[in-house]
Image 1: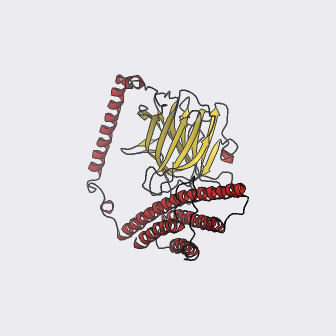
Image 2: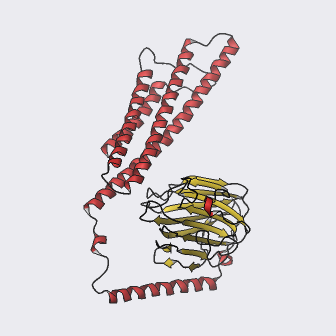
Length: 437
């Protein structure tokens, strides 16, 4: 697949600037939307949207929506766009209308042009898929990747905690979803009694093709005349923006360039940035360790199942009880498996704790909660260390060191001492890196 320009955009009550579009400002009872001017006819597609939803309140309203519908829903009651649309809406709902403490949330709702959106229940009676995600006031842009392929709609979310653009997590999937073959993409937002700024930083649309399928020539997608027209519109917009900047400079001669406070960061800002960057690195390292532990667990389970199978096979063939040696091997392996399970659970808890800590730290530094989060993470890592030491004591004693039996159909076994040594070295390297940081 490749990036496709969906043509120029139609702005309705939205505020464009050089690097983003403010769909709605943080003022009460505002609506705004941006739509493609030309319809799109892709059998399979993928859209990537980067946006920010930010406000000073603990809760915000109402939310932002990403649309694909047969017609442009320029204004209406559903997150600023028209109701009874024909297509699909992916809603980032900020406000908890039904009081069930299930917001902020991402909600997928399909419509054939007849359904009236159930706003009072946050669309829960009509949702085809949903996940709870807090997308407000994140340090980096939140990203949504929406894929429609072979009648399956998949939504992935990057929560905006790290600068990694590809750090997506699964949100929801809808199978057997039928949407119009031709339609318009749009983004809308609305505020109510509470208000957030809803800013869209980028919108990328990709046509997806099956292997071997030929793409149409580019000139069939957008005629050259239209490309020239869009280019001219963009240049006019840039000229208008430059003109407004010049007028502002004339009206405010005392303000030249960027304000001083934007050029230099304060000591507290620098400390906050350094702490947050350190947390990001720790977060990514722990996630990597969690993935590695999952792989080790899978290998261990396969190893235990192969040995168990071989023992039962030999017992059936010879009619004798399994040897003491094989008994020792399998009990040792099961003990290692239990310890690894505990270890993985501990690391998973650390990942969740760190994510919570990052979320809390956005509000400020030096609070009691922040210190407590770091202490909890430290305690989790001590538990990891104790589990590793427990594995070593269980499996490296000279009298109990098991030897793998010679199994003709199987490749040579890796001894437990080598296996444990690899796990210990990996974990100690991680702990050393963590303590160093």
